[in-house]
Image 1 (cartoon, rainbow, N blue to C red):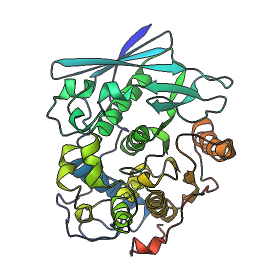
Image 2 (image 1 turned 30 degrees about the vertical axis):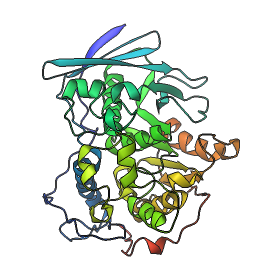
Image 3 (image 1 turned 180 degrees about the vertical axis):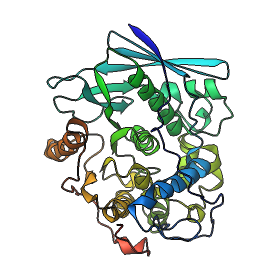
Length: 381
C-alpha cells in the first residue's frame, strides 16, 4: 500500500478568461442560444477561440443550473491503493472526508490499462483490455428526493448550504478520484485514458463529469434524459404539444440533482443564456457517445434534437466523428449496438484518441432541427 499527496491537476478545467464579460443576457428566447456567439456579441471565428467560449459556457452552467464545483488547493488530496480498492482523502478548511472506489483490472491488454468510471456502477458492456472503476455517487451527494440537498460527503466537507447540485457533487468526487489515480501507485490504471458512464439518473451525472473535467477522454451518458441529453427549451415545447415529458419545472421538485440557483429559472428556461446542446461544447474535442432511449418521459425527440444540434459544435470544429449518438430501450444495452460503442471505446481509451473517427448516429426519434435554432454554423479555421 502506498500513500502520497496529490497536486490538483491543472487540466481538470483550464480556466481561460480572455477578457470575458461578467454578465449574461436573460432575454426570453424559445430557440436555443447560439454557441458560436460570445456574450458580448462577437462571433467565434476559429478553433483558437473555443477555449474562451468554453469557459464562458462553463460559468453560467455552474452559476445558474449546476451549482459550484470547487477545485481544492494543491496538496488537499491523498490516495492509497490496496486489494483492488482506491481510498481517497480530501482535506479542506480543517475538515476531511474519505471515500473509496473499486478498481477491476481488465482481461487482456497491457498495464497501465484504460478504464471506465461507472457512476453508481458500470452499465455498459466493456471490451477486453479496458478496466472498470465503480464510483459510489449516492455516498458523495444524496439523490433520494428534493430534500436530499446538502446531504453526503461533499456537503460534509463544504457545508450543507453549498449551492451545488448532487450531480455536480458527483463530478467533484470523480475529479478527486482522478487526482488520486494520478498520484497513487499500484492500481495499474492509466489516468490519461479514462471514460465515464452511467444510466438514467446516473447518466445525468456521467454527462456532467465529462463536461467539467477535461481529463475524461470519453463520456458515455446512457439515457440521461431530461436535465442532461435533452434540452430544456425543446422539452418545454414537447410538453406544450401534449407529450408526457419531464420538464425543468417538474424535475426540481423530484430530486436534488441541480444547484439551488436553478430553482429560480426552472419554469422560465427560455430566459437562460444556456441550454444542453451547449454541454457538448464543454466536452469538445474529447470523445462523446450519447445513448438515448425511447421513453416519452425522458424525451426522445428532445434528446435527439438537442444532441444533433450540439453535434454541430463538433462539426464546426472539424471533429464530427468524435461525437456519436445512439438509442435503445431503457438501461438494456443491445448487442446490435456493441460495435458502435466499442468503436468509441477503442478509439479514445485503447488507442489514445488520435484523429477523428467515422461518425455514428442512430436514433429512435426524428426531429426537425430548424424548429429549434436559427443561428448559422460556421466552419472554424
